Image (tube, rainbow, N blue to C red; front, side, top):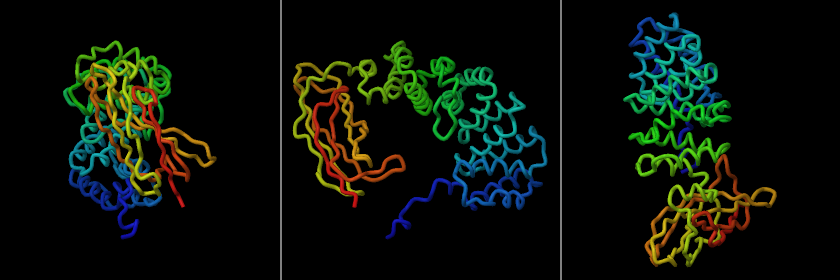
Amino acid sequence: MSTTETAAPALKEIFNAERLQHIASEMSAVYPAFKAKAFLKHANDGLADLSVMQRMARVSASLHAVLPLDYTDSLAVLRELAPRLNSGFVSMSLPHYVASYGTHAFDTSMEALKYFTTFGSSEFAIRHFLRSDLERSLERMHDWTRDENHHVRRLASEGSRPRLPWSFRLEPVQANPQLAAGILDRLKADESLYVRKSVANHLNDVTKEHPEWVLNTVEGWALENKHTAWIAKHALRSLIKQGDLRALTVIGAGAKAEVELLDVKVEPAVVRLGDTITLSFTVRSLAPVEQRLVIDYAIDYVKANGGTSAKVFKLKTLDLAGFGSEVVARRQVIKDFTTRKHYAGEHAVHVVVNGERLASTAVNILVS
């Protein structure tokens, strides 16, 4: 079977012709005067050349182009449409409509974003309001942290992330994370994993510019709460990968590991793109008491110029009994990504325990 036959459909195909017909049909059901043919003509024009986010914007623009209603009345129709759409991602075109045509009506638009986020997410749309009216938007989002719906609570954290993927950066929050600190503080023990992941990702964003601020914040939390401890661990993941001692201490792994690593190897030792390697070793305690160990591994990827660039991967966190031992193994497929291209040569592989490289081996990657 060919690669084309087995490849997954492109993400942008979420907004394909069939989906656009679904939107048109559901709009006609809630608003019989809807000009479905005009919508489809507008939405399908040049569709093949558009990315997934451009297609989402196109749906929003196409709805606007054919709806003869004012903004408030259009929202009323779109509110009826939202629960009828058969994709959470597609429903994000509705918050996009709010961001595109509703910045003049702050209160009405905020209520619409709060409603629409329960069907997909308003995380991209809310950022346009944060850009145009930061103080008032953050105040409203702070109120959302007490909402009974976890989608709304998550929007408060996710929408205010300084480095939200697929969106522009919130430069004021990026420069001063304290602006959103109240939101994060009110969500630091949230019962919803969906919310906790967002809080952790928000804080991990902040570690890129303000690691000390994040560490000071997390160290001030009551980490005996399991939800708060979970957020702290995942918020500090980038710093933990870097071997930051304070970050490791927060999760109980700040002490030097009293261990030895035995039989460290990568198999097979020579691979081609598409092959799978297995890193394995035994970690044995040299101490009489239990130790918290954060075990990662790093690969020194060969670059086009012959140099190398290290990439750290999470492996395992374990509590190793005094004088105990455990076998650790991890499989990884060697393949190119849009963010990583492999070049031929010997790639060093290092095992990192509590921030310290304790053993190394290598794998030879053949590209031709």
